[in-house]
Length: 171
Image (cartoon, rainbow, N blue to C red; front, side, top):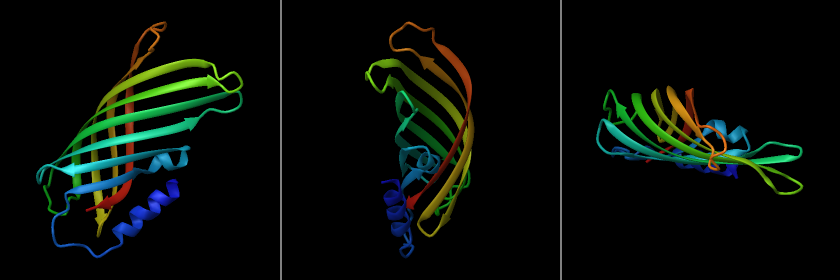
């Protein structure tokens, strides 16, 4: 499935570059491809200097007697420093991400634990474009609030570094 998504994005981006300005981007989170998961992002330009993105992701992990599933959603506002019509170059971002993780025993299918996380973050990044294909790395810092939905464990807030890398199609 992940290979199909990447192939479609690359084939769509290999077309002839159009003269009009791109206003949308559809991307895959590259790190998710190697982690038994998948993360997708849609970005919409609001003006020459502002764009907004939304992301969805999911992943299965753990092993042996345990299984885990994590799902996440994020929204991000980006300010483009150069305001280029090609929609490339440096940007600053404010991101709010939320995630849900559950761990269960494989044999009994009993839930061992659940966690909810909320992470606001500030990031800097750069987008490169070749025709309609985009590659966008970013680095940032934030604070992750970890919550136990059952209320049995105390909440914790921990500093978090964010690393992003998307590959997609700008149209």
